Amino acid sequence: MPTTKTATQKTPTKSSVKKVSTKVTAKVTTKATPQVATKTSDAGTPLSVVIRRRIEAKKARFHANDNISAFIQPGELDALVDEVAQKMQAVLESLVIDTKSDHNTQNTSRRVAKMFVKEVFNGRYVEQPVLTKFPNVSRLNELMIIGPITVRSACSHHLCPIMGRIWIGVLPSKESALIGLSKYSRLTEWVMCRPQIQEEAVVELADMLEKKIKPIGVAIVMDADHFCMQWRGVKDRDSKMVNSVMRGAFLKDSNLRREFLSLLDKR
Picture 1 (tube, helix red, strand yellow):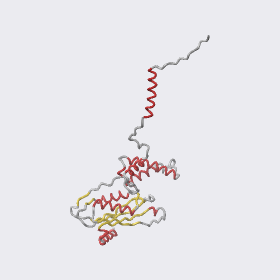
Picture 2 (tube, helix red, strand yellow):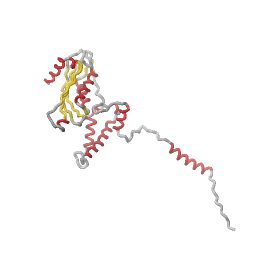
Picture 3 (cartoon, helix red, strand yellow):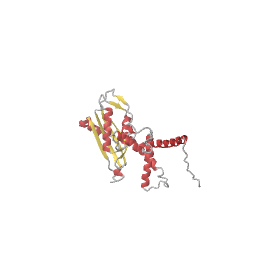
Picture 4 (cartoon, one colour):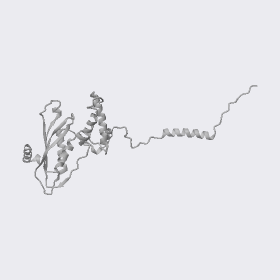
């Protein structure tokens, strides 16, 4: 009679059950653990997008001629230059410029990026210059004219240069604060170092001066060449734009306005 072999099943010991159980539990636990957000949650996001989100969160405006320095943290301007340089490189490539073998354009993207962020549009990204105010001890209330102040800007439409001059007339009150003459130039440069429209730029400058020194009157005249007309488009190299803003006493008193404008003709 043949012998029948019975299959014997090995009963797992307590220790082996424990090992299996531990292994499975560990696997499930790992899947269920949520990822913890770190401080570097913006890693990989372009800096321009991060700055834009900060501005939008405050519902602030960021037009071409707006200052956005309040939303830029220390050290970020260099990183912004890096980002603009990458995108400017893409522009050069789309213009079918061989920046690899053309030694003249090998570093053009970075030069242009640095020029935009650190120089010609710098008025968007840095804080307003600090103004030293002096009390009007002598209680001066006579007409002062500052200028011509050299203006360098760019038109918002084509980013072509705007080159010109500005004259500022101030009629202080006896209670007005006085600022140093150099500060008029610094404020003008800060406003103009952005993509601008001339008629908006002079209004912005007049608003700022009224707020800072609280005079009886402010007058501004700007005379500029616009390369968007001279370099492209109609290519009329003799065309200029002259405009003015009159506030307070300059708007109401025709004699004061006439005195201011006549003195400009002699400069």
